[in-house]
Length: 199
Image (cartoon, rainbow, N blue to C red; front, side, top):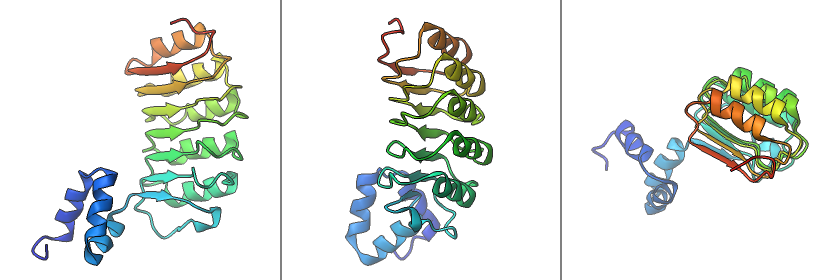
């Protein structure tokens, strides 16, 4: 392995899935060191563990940090906006539409956003997400208070959407689904368990 440059090894690591990366890392101390320098996902365990000096992360996972609020998420946005492509807020409930607006405005490369279980989010939050023009995957399961108006904003703003999960979004009707069908021409997967949306 000494004959391979770090750049070549990082290119190889780009093609490995997470299980293979873990196996690679467990092989030796030098492999572990290489894999840790290559890592592109930051999984926070506590809000105070943000590292502003490490800007290589493309994905931030807040699932183990349910106490992440507007301040923590805004700090992460400010620290990683240049490289950030994916954010998982599926277990965080303490953020508002203001944070989503900042996330959408600052992170032009954001393509994945998981807002599942954000039961307090309303149409204002959906309108804020509509500013994330490059968004391709959006999970909004159990966002009960988002209506057709919010979905209409997303349909108009996020034309690159390929996947949208609206499971248990009970206020979405055929009107919202129709707007998505008309505006988001790349949409391949629309998950909805709302009784108001026809099959």
